[in-house]
Length: 268
Figure 1 (cartoon, rainbow, N blue to C red):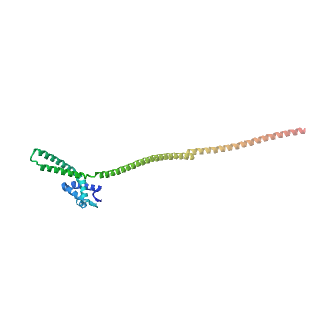
Figure 2 (figure 1 turned 120 degrees about the vertical axis):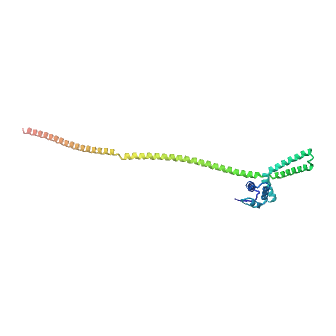
């Protein structure tokens, strides 16, 4: 893995120091003063990091003795060994109290031993004071984590808005799908009704076979009726002519009789 840093005294550089500490302690099993000394060398000189890390790490600037030691005290000793120092301070205090107490009851404990106890406890307290000045800068990581958390929250909010928009779009699409399904069913019903109407119109325009037979028979009957009427008209015409002839004949007979009677009356 390629890592490029400006210096170890940065957020990513401090994280890298922590990762190297865990790698050396738990993977390479380096412990004790040797581990502390290696990490101190890495903090003051960037070139030493290549010897103890398998990653391809490029650091632009070394921190030097003062800044490197300060970083080492903050990120390594104070973070991971301060509890050990604190325990030694309490242990020195316990020894000092024991020496002071035994000094009153025994001649074996002289003033030199008691003073040495005070010097030891004072040295431990001074050392504790020095390391307390170099507390780890966890607020940098908290701010970084908070910024990342804020970015995550914003990303989650954006994802939530996208999900809501997608759900709304899906709901609208479902409504449109239902509408188109209803429209399709209505169209099918309309097509069926038009088909039935077309069939009915076709039936009305194109009579069936029975109706055609009935119409043929009706035409035949009409033709017979026409012929009968024509024959009847001819008979009526013939009868009228016969009657007219009879009437004319009777009239002529009457005229002839009258004329004959007049002629006879004249001749007498």
